[in-house]
Image (tube, rainbow over all chains, first blue to last red; front, side, top):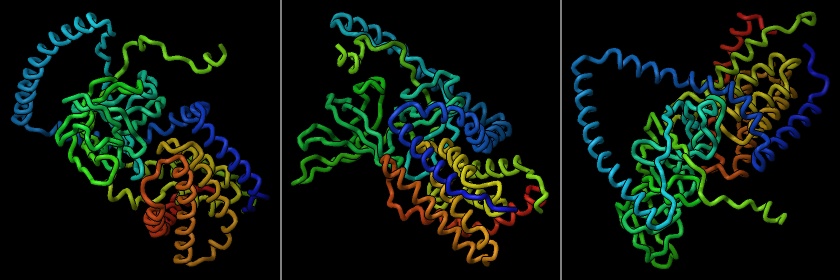
Amino acid sequence: MAAPANPTYRLLIALVLAIIMMVLDQRTPWATPVRHVLGYLTAPIHYLAHLPVDSSEWLSEQTQSRGSLMDENRRLQRQALILEQKVQRLAVLEAENVRLRELLNSSADLDANVLVAEIIGVDPDPNRQELVINKGRGDQVSRGQAVLDAQGLIGQVVDAGPLSARVLLVTDASHAMSVQVNRNGVRAVLAGTGQSDGLKLLYVPDTADIREGDLLVSTGLGQRYPRGYPVATVTSVRHQSGAPFAEITARPTARVDRASHVLLVQPTEKPLIPVPDPEAANDA
Amino acid sequence: MMHDRPAGTGVIIVTLLIAALLEVVPLPDSVNWVRPEWMLLVLVYWVLELPSRIGVLWGFFVGLYHDVLVGTTLGQWGLAYALGAFVMLAAYKRMRVFTSLQQCAVVFLLVGTVSLLAFLVQESVGRTLYPPYTILYASLTSAVLWRPVCALLRWVQLRFLVR
């Protein structure tokens, strides 16, 4: 077993390749094909890692007694009845909303299509809050799509692989979004803290009318998240004398750390006002 | 053994994929801190055993796979693993005569260095939250698990005639 003649050149090649890839991945979309190809090989690992959870769920479903299944069925039927009643009112309200918006000459925001996905992996790195879901480009998942669970907004798709996709959670320390207080419409920036139950509002003046228990909903500014989905509830408001901004913490309404299924929202239409192309503007 | 033809590349890939599975298998948050760098351990084993076949470029591609698996910047772990493989190529003769404890110490330093390199890249793209000394926990468990992993892979190597 002879050692290779000179691994130094290979190291140089690897270093140069790695640095080029890092720059391309950070600055341009050109590294996506590499990710896409390798995604075919990494997705099965995520599916496999999720298998024990899947099979234990299957097992507990198979071994449940008839009584408990009937109980569950009854509970779900009751829940469905309540939800249907709410939807009845919603249809009326929605129609009214569209009419009022037409009166105001503003665009109607229509229902978005949703796609259900299952969470098959959680990022093992404590520095990052990310999930892996079992839907990818094959299911028309694309980068930037909003992800919800039954209670509220969870995050957005940051990397759509061929068979799976990665979701950046709203609680990630590098994530921030525009929200408004449902009660009075005060807008603020909601940023993650890296803890699965911690969010904070940034740059809120001491005098802003935000109270404990306020519901924060997405504003749709930034064109990333659809408007009007609940994101978080305010848990504490602290005014510090001397500090320029109030210290406000919030907890996500979505059960970020224990959801098992999520909804992907697909925007149904393009924005009515076309987004100006800065390069085209420069040419003119 | 010069006349031996290389064999068992598939087995090497399978061991690396099993390590990849162990890297993403869901665990409680507190255990995530001490999750060993399985893929790096397996890679180091094969570099030490088959330095003529498994080297820097294997390290690079295994690292690239790791990047896509855990969703880091493409090339972050590729760079780190390539360097780790290079260091092991330079030290494989010494590693063979080291005692278990010395080997564990080398693995501890290697995993620490490689993770630190990856941490620096992650830091530069703004995706770190905790201070860099937190990678020591995983390095420590990697070093502790080095001998068991070694024994297991030795068995695999003999069983499937990897050379």
